[in-house]
Length: 145
Image 1 (spheres, one colour):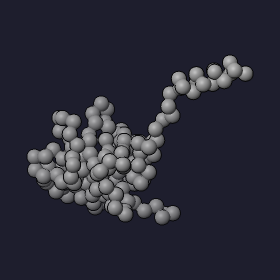
Image 2 (cartoon, rainbow, N blue to C red; image 1 turned 180 degrees about the horizontal axis):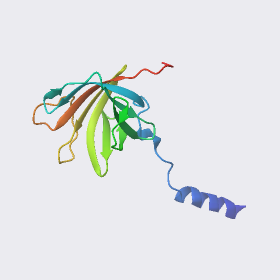
Image 3 (cartoon, helix red, strand yellow; image 1 turned 90 degrees about the vertical axis):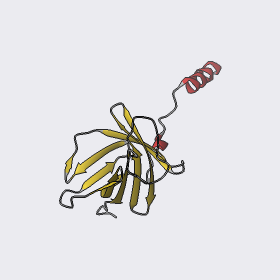
């Protein structure tokens, strides 16, 4: 009996921790349509015939759609909603783009840095020369909403 307890204790202590699911903000999960995009101080136009949408999945996968067609780029994301402002890391291959985000009702504001160093924006702006992008997105309502 004592040997069994010791075995269970050894397994529990030596076992890897359960995967941390807290890295994905559940409020972010779902589809969001892009309303505005500002890159390096330039406001890019949005094509209403071919809307740009981001789908954030609970497994950390991010899929972007132009109209109904997914872009053939697989990205992943991690979030920390406890940070002020909340942070998001967008991962493509071996490159991580650091950003911040906020969700206000059905509006998602996302600001990310795409420069060569490991910087993260501290405010929701994308002025000229900043190598930052600022997106404003609206949640896509589902039939059950």
